[in-house]
Image 1 (tube, rainbow, N blue to C red):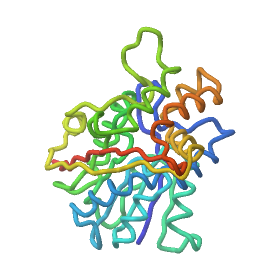
Image 2 (cartoon, rainbow, N blue to C red):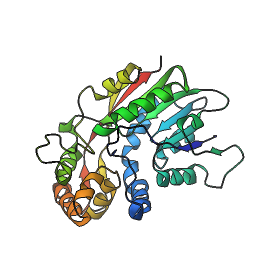
Image 3 (tube, one colour):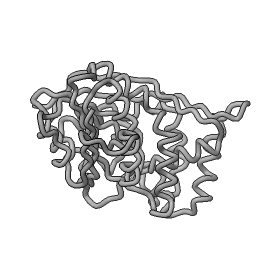
Image 4 (cartoon, rainbow, N blue to C red):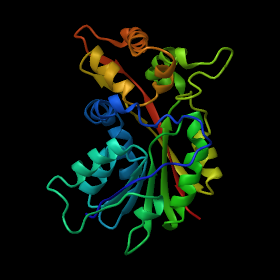
Length: 288
């Protein structure tokens, strides 16, 4: 395995992105909450895509928005050569720790710079993943540009995996996100969570692939329930996603946490655990 991890700022139009790092004072704590509580919720999505593509030895994978590296770690465990880019240096630092637990061996390259720095030296990528953050209104333009650039680093016909939320009626967490983000909604704005999360459209992934010049080649749905040990863990985990940062800019954290806890209450079980069934969707596209 020869992991490459790059800090990469996705291009965007100036609006706040849902995966922007939170304020420095809470960045590291949020990163740990993401890695220890929230990130594992999407493992079924990662594994389903990897199974479908047969990720393993011979796979040269580039992860866009790799976060703290769990998806890369799972691919590397299958024998893939992995590289990752992310805008959050705090998460990227943790990804480096996960992928190089014994330090920095000679065959490991960790660079900081643009997406081009992630290009493998011996052969182009043959799998690109963008599990995050489809479903955030303000990220579409930036993600389109990143996918287009990534496609230029991949072989012709390479698989590109796009992930996102499934139908709202099959995602219990959608209601929680909708209620908890009300402080961030401008007066009269009909789009819930317009600066963070919004309900997914039926063809969002296909539209994104088309914008990036990719050819759709199959899709699937995966159950990704969000389960937490208690209400406090659920609040910390969901806040770590960055989807509530817009609300935190206009309301005190205590108020946002209170609304989030109230929205989570219907999903708290008698033993104190919190359980929310969700369905996520992925699209397999191909580079031209």
